[in-house]
Amino acid sequence: MTFEEYLEQAFSNMRDNKLTEAMKYALLGGKHFRPALIFAVTDGFNIEREEAYPAALALEMVHSYSLIHDDLPCMDNDDLRRGKPTVHKAFGEDIAVLAGDALLTHAFNVISEADYDDHTKVRMIQELSNLAGLGGMVHGQYLDMFYTGKDINEAILDEIEDYKTGGLFECALVFGMLLGNDEENLAFYASMALKIGRVFQLQDDLFEITKTEEELGKNASDVDNDKASALSVYTKEELEERIANLFKEMFEQLDYAKFNTNELRKIIENMRDR
Image (cartoon, rainbow, N blue to C red; front, side, top):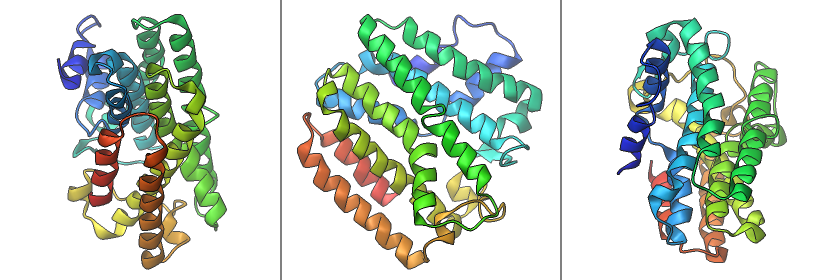
């Protein structure tokens, strides 16, 4: 079974109504980049990919919830996501809010019912609740709103990126680490996730001025909304140089991994070329 088929199957036992339709609409499609990070690590430990599916589903549910809420009129007020209307445009604000709420809360149910040992389940719940919440993404979203329309420096930009984007990337690599039983090397996964998160967000900021909305599949609204962006800290040339340096650091760090890094290396190479 592919991961996409597994995602479809996740809704088979849910009520068939507008709410679950909106949840499914938000979850399906997209690149599933965070699950791919989990699989890159578990593949490197020679773990059957389907064993990682529940962890990947839970994380993708949380990511999808965050996109729904990010796009709301009270946040970024975007009407395009993954090349199609945002959830609140397709289903209305009320259903969009509830769909985000449902995806977030159901993610923890997915982990609790997974065929993992109790230690792994508890650690996953701890990491997801922290890195998706005040210890990660939600704090980053708060900083992103707080600094809208304000002058920022490199340190503030790094903090926003590390929490808002890096939080769920760290969760992905840590999920892979837990399934691979490699907790003693947590520092490697946290450091790699930080670099992936920074370069991912820096690229997104750069794409705001180098790609069309059709190419992005979403609204390029950060500049118009006066959001804290790398473009307010770096010139285009400086930004490109910083991105190149981060890729160099990531490739060097892969040599210290305790698993076969072929799949993770491919992901990073694809990021460099996107």
